[in-house]
Length: 143
Length: 382
Ligand SMILES: [Zn+2]
Image 1 (cartoon, rainbow over the protein chains, first blue to last red):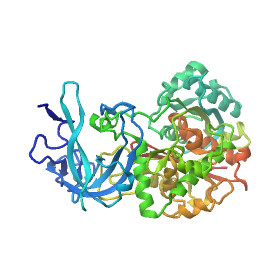
Image 2 (image 1 turned 180 degrees about the vertical axis):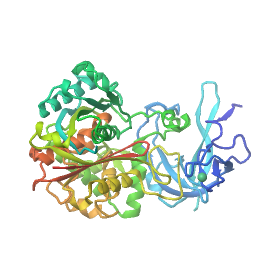
Image 3 (image 1 turned 120 degrees about the horizontal axis):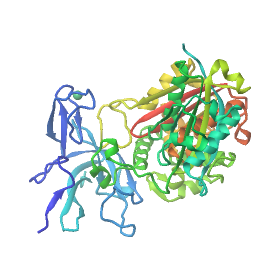
């Protein structure tokens, strides 16, 4: 059994039965920020609380990344194995619009306004066998 | 003391690929060209501002031009570096500190997309690791939303690039000098949906330099001084949709381009309808479309008709990117914003040759946009 580790600390709850993206919310103006920060981009207040973001929202905009990015891109892919991937902003109600990779990479299957849910999947496998987990947005089946 | 400011000398090293010269040497070519244009020597220059993203510190140009002891300051502000250098020089003369100075920018980038450093922009390394640290993605997502909201067609995206390459073919200093058809542009390899490879500018090489002076002394150097009526830089406010943002606010605010344009028009005491020729940041086709409205030259959505009807061509009612813009010139970061000013000065001198806007333009406008959400605008007057 390999270790499954989060790509970075504090981006989402991990390990967890039901992992969720983490945001900070300003106790002065009520604005949420992702990733969670120590201060508020809207009002510069420093009194913030950590909260879990909702796991469903709607696709606000998107594109398909058709070429392999240069480093710091670190997926373990090579030019030969690279597969285009979707990227989008998903509006999480009451929270914030979060940018994330999409599990769908077919432009014909993506549309602004469609319902999406956050999922946590292996992004790459390290040489020592550790699986690095990141968050992705996935179209909600039948939505 | 509150001095008006004039541009009295302009110089350029052609954009594109120049294997024999470093970026800094291309900057030196541009600087000598600008000095010659103003009829002065490097030792006459009292101060300088300059920028380069990948070809060393601009002040090292002194090694090429001569060590004269002047204050020479390096400027770095992403793709808005050129605009930022110019504003710094403008303020220096405006304040009465010095009478005569130079602004310069040059660069020489590797092929392929720019590689950005997450930590340099206050972001976690994970953001780059998962493949979201790309300017091309941001522009694709921004125009995707914009097309959905305002009914811009895919053909209009191609028409912007077609115009850029046509204008570039008329400009001896441009990199891309071959016209490309709408069909070829639209049908080319997709880079970031909905944008194909011909719709993006590429990192390139080149240099530009400008000589600026107190307006009341301008006629010592040139018969056709071009006056800098505005030079404004703004950064993003909370709620605007900008590049390299892991999240986006639910509340929406106007972007830095809107703010910079508004302030520049106020400063110059003119409005968008008064402008005869304009250079707008065209990192890709969609950016030119969105920037037409963000700078105040039309309402959101009007671009579809304006572009399809040819209004933004050199002989149209609102000529945009008459030298081919970033699409035909490529983007050497330090030089890019200054290329826009170089082109505008040529236009206002009525000396742009084959890419000259007809009707003797009197007022020109430039706009650069850079990461992580900075816009610089100038308004120039003959
Ligand atoms: Zn706040």
